[in-house]
Length: 302
Image (tube, rainbow, N blue to C red; front, side):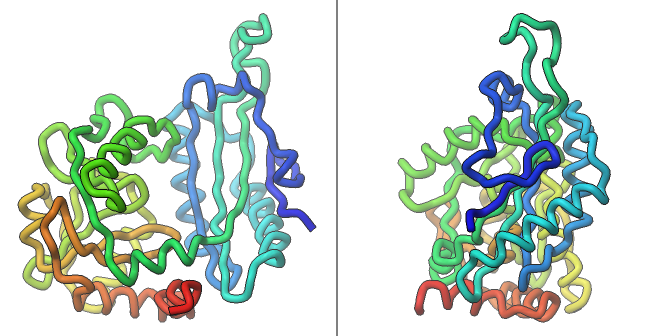
C-alpha cells in the first residue's frame, strides 16, 4: 500500500505526483506553502495553518480555487491513509503548496497555460533527527547573508523562494558544522532560522523578535498562549546578537519538534535546557495529550 499525495484535488500515489517542468513553481520559484503536524494522527492547529496558507497565496498573487472545506477533506483523507504506514509512536507532517500554474510561453502560448497548481503530501516526522536537537540543544550561527527586506518580500508569506536560506545554511555549516543559520535583518536585528522562530528568556520574560519582521509562526502563537497560561511575561522587541548571547536561555519553536532548547548562539554557550523551556514544553505536552519529549527521544532509543 503506497503512500498517497494530493495534486489538483485528486489523491494518487506519491510516485505519480509530478509537476510540469514549465510550472511557475520551478520557473519563477513562485510557491507558497505551509506545514501542519499531527498528534495521535489528528491535525494540530489545522485551521490556523490553513488561514496562513490562504494569506500566503493572496500575498503572492497565487489564487486558491479550493475552499477551506475542500482542502480540509483532502487533508483528512491523506492522513487517514498514510497514518497506517507509520511505525508505532510516529506522527505525520502534512505539507500544502500552491503555485501560479504552468507558464504558457514554454508551450508557445500566452500567459498561464493552466490553473494554479495545488497539492499536498505527508512525511513521517523525523523524530530521530529531532532527538539530538532536544538532547544537545540547537547551535545557531549568524552568516553574512541577511534576511530578505520586507520591502522585497513580505516576511509573513510562507514561500519556497529560499535560495538565500540555502546559501546561509551553507555558510553556517562552513563556520560551525552542525549549526543552523540565524539571520539578521538589514538593520542588524535578529530574525529567525530557516525552520523555526527564536525566543529568548531575559529575567523571567520570554521575548520574541518583533513579528512585523518574521514569519508569524503557529508554534510561536502556541508559546505565547503557554506563557499566558503559566503566568510568564511575553514580549516582542528588536533583538541584537549581543542580546541573544546575554540571554538567560533561548529556544526555538517549530511545527514538527514544537520546542527545542538552544545551546549556543554564534559561539557563545547558553544554559541548556533552561527552566522556562522545560515548563513550556511540559505545558504543550499536556495541551496535546502527548509527551512530546518522550515521543521524540524514544525514537533514538535513548
